[in-house]
Amino acid sequence: MTFARRLLPFIIVLAALSAAGWWFTRPKPVAVVVHEVGRGRVEASVANTRAGEVEACQRTKLATIAGGRIDYLGVKEGDRVEAGQVLMRLWHGDLRSRAAVAEAQLATARQRSTEACTVAANAHSEAERQAALVKRGFVSASVEEKARTEAAARAASCASAKSDVKTAERQLESIGTDFNRIMIVAPFAGTVAKITGELGEISTPSPPGVPTPPAIDLIDDSCLYVKAPMDEVDAPKIHPGQPARISFEALPDRTFAGKVKRIAPYITAVEKQARTVEVDVDFANAEEARGLLVGYSADVEIVLDTREDVLRIPTAAIREGNRVLVLGGDGILTERTVKPGLANWEQTEVLDGLAAGDRIVTSLEREGVKAGARATVEGTR
Image (cartoon, rainbow, N blue to C red; front, side, top):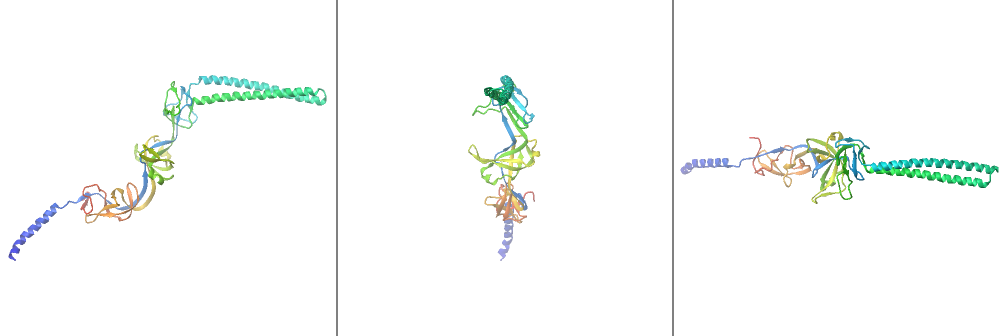
């Protein structure tokens, strides 16, 4: 007993040293970032796989049908033009000469027609008079027959002259058609984006299979939309009328509301790697789109479904197998399996496994963050 009493102080000191050693060598709590589970809106959406771009509702690349030297260039790049305005015309001295000849021929044909038809009318009247004299017995029937034959011949000459007039008119119209072959007229009001060629240069139309730059690129920038490629697996989920959000690299602080207008009826393969479907998205407010430049790169997020006031957590906090780490009141990390609902890149709806107020870890990439580890919320003492 005396011996045990003598050892007791040593045992107490040893236990104290062991406790101190454990205290100073124990694992330090890992600092984590947590998110308190709450309620709010969750949207399911899809986004373009590659950058989309702003397109004009009307855009045409114009060129003359025939080639020739540019004789008239009535616009500059950036000019606003009206529908029907002449933008460019090639040299057409030969057409002017042909038109002058055709006009003279038409005038002559009309004069001959007037002359022939006047004579025909007179011959018809004469035949009628001879017919009246035959009935009264003043002339023979042969005289009447001769007068009627003459009237018929003159009537045929009148018809032939009228036909010559129509032929001359068609010839003049054909020259007018040739004028259209060497002239560019604006098919709609818009802005001249690009002009290829200068006054006096030769403008050549594209031969079959050999694309060449258009003489004039005309854009109607009063109506704009966004064309964006979506992954082929998302194509069945997208329908006209779905709401969308449009953003631009050039305008990082603005988001534009949009609506799906059209889904292409075919899949596009880019280098046989990414298969996408083109989706056209209109701006919900056309006035907001005014001033945007055609060709701006754009990102489109199409909203497929929306749920309000649901339990939600950051999508980045979910591990493989729908597992999350929860920081308990005792400072220990525990793992739970959740049942996800609607989700997007930012938020995921939680149907089961968590309650409002639970603290889940979002800094999963940090060393030591695992189930069973002691943790402290970053920024707390």
